Image (cartoon, rainbow, N blue to C red):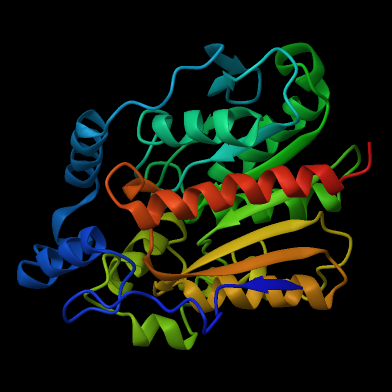
Length: 328
């Protein structure tokens, strides 16, 4: 397993009292610590969704692309998607599953990121507007993501100009991307050619050390992560099931090559890194990197944080490199 991010020759800048990547991240965290505000379980899903919409409206727009089209994948039920095309014949089609704890987030929340991935990685991006909890608990979001990925495999050349299909996502979207790969590995038909997992949830039992070490004060509180999991998988006994927690899958052989990116100051860090290590042990090619000094959700800070922007650039370069290694 290729692993980056722990080079002692490139230490994380120390910003005041916080050992974080830059002053923007430090200021965000100081604000969080000075006024944490109510927890996710105190606020509730509707207020969280309203806050997500406000943040989306305030975020700078992403880059202009050759073509952006809203479509509906004919599944049961149908799934809304948005297709971003940087050029008529991109290097691949990335089925991208947004984060948001399976409960918030939508096509708008990740629009700027999808545009950036399309432009800078040279791929078409198919963003998935999956059903959300608590109205639609597990396995609804997995079913939607699988249906869209199968459709992309079948229709990629026609709709996006390529038949190379990759699946990826951030946070809960990384969880769903990993579960898509596991389900399609064991199903008839063609599986994705690769997977891109960015600070993914892989173990909904939240039992690894970083959940305690980074429990509060780092942007994503561990109890908020647990609350999101409770909305998606209300039965606590099910959260250790491999159909929910890919880290609990005993056999990871035969899965597609992976990019696995984690953040140093993230309660989900250890489970993402453990999944990358298990993939490598199973013989899956893995490029893993811990982003020093960054926090969960750093892709969303790229417009203001130079360190987050640089990490986003590294991710798009990783995707380009991975695609160059795939069989033609």
